[in-house]
Image (cartoon, rainbow, N blue to C red; front, side, top):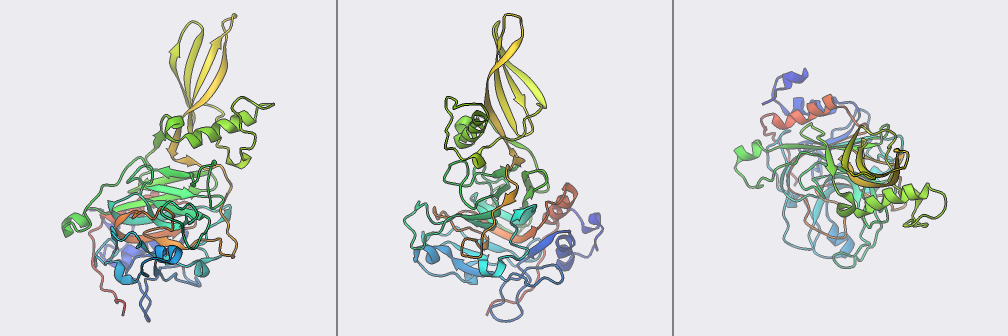
Length: 419
């Protein structure tokens, strides 16, 4: 086990010292350890926040199916079983619900977060979300401001229809199940003409699945540290698992994620004079996907004949297949370029801002455990032992420090219970 002394902190194994690992990290906005609660009322979970903060973001419970489809019942704290033990002293369980109309989550309503430090949006803003969790199953949302909307009607028309209200969030994989998946959006809605937002990163490493009712010894050894960061200075969105930002590529992107391939292609066709074969003149210019490709980091010859050579040029975020023809004078001239692979970790984000909703109902809540979405799937299930949000991207050393908490021997912290 990694000790607190390694990071220059008090060696006493207590919740206070573990919380200090998080709260003493620059840029903290909010940290829920599921131990700290309101002193009165229903004793909602409160966040640790910087000194002088105007709110500590108490969490409400809700079933978004009831709110948007007017079905089933509301949710309460009783719908989130407590482990009574964890990296910081407690954890909540996100259950594998069998009722198709019951999808509970914990949340901070938009009315209580709009224009607060948790509402990370606009230009020049970076963000990191860190979640300590044990994944039982699923690949969907862990925490963030990521209201996907109820306008797609995947599981029946919603009674309350809302467009997407996405800003930033951390997922347990999405297209790469079990990875740490960061997600950001510039418009709250879709990307590249697709029905979903597509700016997401996936860590190369993947978390295991562990039965949520496993013996205590197994649970104690199974904590994972999921994290995402968006760095506005580098335009990089990165997924981190257990302190590592292991790289990942998506090969054969034309087949695997055709909308990204087309967004890259449309951007290149648009730069050429006149209407090109295959160019879509009405494709939105702000939806092109063209990461920097000035100088390749490597070039690999895939095939070569007397008159044709095919090379694979690798850049930081893309691999491009270049076909060349040999001229009569012996020189090679490129005749076509096509996107072969795209890097998923880190992912290059082409915009200079995060979605900035007005205070008119077009902003989403901050949710933990699930997000509002039309497919209404169960999503992630398992234990969540801590959720932290920072208003800066943090560096590898800071991430290692936060990740190390998962290796501390889990502790029990008595906490007041809801009435």
